Length: 100
Image (cartoon, helix red, strand yellow):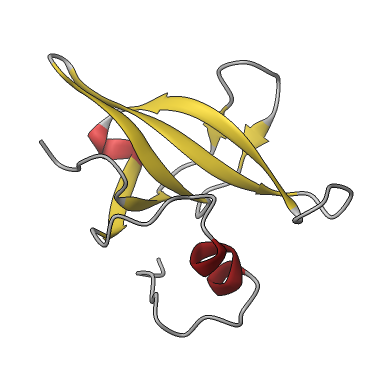
Protein backbone atom coordinates (compact mmCIF):
# COMPACT_ATOMS: atom_id res chain seq x y z
CA UNK A 1 0.00 0.00 0.00
CA UNK A 2 1.24 3.45 -0.92
CA UNK A 3 -0.11 5.24 2.17
CA UNK A 4 -1.57 4.67 5.61
CA UNK A 5 -4.25 6.32 7.74
CA UNK A 6 -3.39 9.90 8.77
CA UNK A 7 -0.69 10.37 6.09
CA UNK A 8 -0.64 13.91 4.69
CA UNK A 9 -1.13 13.93 0.91
CA UNK A 10 -1.20 16.37 -2.00
CA UNK A 11 -3.33 15.79 -5.09
CA UNK A 12 -1.58 15.44 -8.47
CA UNK A 13 -4.61 16.20 -10.63
CA UNK A 14 -7.88 18.13 -10.44
CA UNK A 15 -10.43 16.00 -8.55
CA UNK A 16 -14.20 15.97 -9.01
CA UNK A 17 -15.82 15.81 -5.56
CA UNK A 18 -17.77 12.64 -4.82
CA UNK A 19 -20.71 14.38 -3.13
CA UNK A 20 -20.96 17.69 -5.04
CA UNK A 21 -20.10 19.32 -8.37
CA UNK A 22 -16.98 20.91 -6.88
CA UNK A 23 -13.72 20.59 -8.84
CA UNK A 24 -10.87 20.37 -6.33
CA UNK A 25 -7.64 21.76 -7.82
CA UNK A 26 -4.37 19.91 -8.27
CA UNK A 27 -2.09 20.54 -5.29
CA UNK A 28 -4.83 20.39 -2.65
CA UNK A 29 -3.72 18.96 0.71
CA UNK A 30 -5.54 16.28 2.66
CA UNK A 31 -5.22 13.32 4.99
CA UNK A 32 -5.86 9.62 4.50
CA UNK A 33 -8.85 8.51 6.60
CA UNK A 34 -9.39 4.95 5.25
CA UNK A 35 -7.36 2.48 3.15
CA UNK A 36 -8.80 -0.16 0.82
CA UNK A 37 -6.46 -2.97 -0.32
CA UNK A 38 -8.19 -4.50 -3.35
CA UNK A 39 -8.40 -2.57 -5.54
CA UNK A 40 -6.02 -0.17 -3.82
CA UNK A 41 -7.86 3.07 -3.03
CA UNK A 42 -7.99 5.64 -0.24
CA UNK A 43 -10.68 7.75 1.41
CA UNK A 44 -9.17 11.20 1.84
CA UNK A 45 -10.38 14.37 3.58
CA UNK A 46 -9.24 17.30 1.43
CA UNK A 47 -8.87 20.85 2.78
CA UNK A 48 -10.81 23.40 0.74
CA UNK A 49 -10.05 27.05 1.44
CA UNK A 50 -13.21 28.94 2.38
CA UNK A 51 -12.75 32.32 4.10
CA UNK A 52 -16.51 32.49 4.77
CA UNK A 53 -16.39 29.76 7.45
CA UNK A 54 -14.82 29.77 10.90
CA UNK A 55 -11.34 28.29 10.59
CA UNK A 56 -11.05 29.21 6.91
CA UNK A 57 -11.53 25.70 5.50
CA UNK A 58 -14.22 23.20 4.58
CA UNK A 59 -13.47 19.54 3.97
CA UNK A 60 -14.44 17.22 1.13
CA UNK A 61 -14.15 13.45 1.43
CA UNK A 62 -13.12 11.69 -1.80
CA UNK A 63 -11.94 8.24 -2.84
CA UNK A 64 -8.64 8.38 -4.75
CA UNK A 65 -6.41 5.83 -6.43
CA UNK A 66 -2.65 5.84 -5.69
CA UNK A 67 -1.86 7.60 -8.99
CA UNK A 68 -3.91 10.66 -8.02
CA UNK A 69 -1.80 11.84 -5.06
CA UNK A 70 1.62 11.88 -3.43
CA UNK A 71 2.36 11.31 0.24
CA UNK A 72 3.81 14.49 1.74
CA UNK A 73 4.35 13.26 5.29
CA UNK A 74 3.80 10.12 7.32
CA UNK A 75 3.79 12.08 10.59
CA UNK A 76 0.20 10.96 11.33
CA UNK A 77 -1.14 14.51 11.21
CA UNK A 78 -4.88 15.08 11.03
CA UNK A 79 -6.13 17.21 8.15
CA UNK A 80 -8.05 19.20 10.76
CA UNK A 81 -5.10 19.70 13.11
CA UNK A 82 -3.91 23.21 14.00
CA UNK A 83 -0.39 22.34 12.75
CA UNK A 84 -1.63 21.62 9.22
CA UNK A 85 -3.90 24.66 9.16
CA UNK A 86 -0.97 26.81 10.35
CA UNK A 87 1.25 25.37 7.62
CA UNK A 88 -1.35 26.08 4.92
CA UNK A 89 -1.71 29.62 6.27
CA UNK A 90 2.09 30.04 6.09
CA UNK A 91 2.90 30.09 9.80
CA UNK A 92 4.11 26.49 10.34
CA UNK A 93 7.63 25.74 9.05
CA UNK A 94 7.74 22.14 10.33
CA UNK A 95 5.75 20.57 7.49
CA UNK A 96 7.38 20.92 4.08
CA UNK A 97 5.40 19.58 1.12
CA UNK A 98 6.79 18.38 -2.16
CA UNK A 99 5.79 21.07 -4.64
CA UNK A 100 5.21 20.03 -8.24
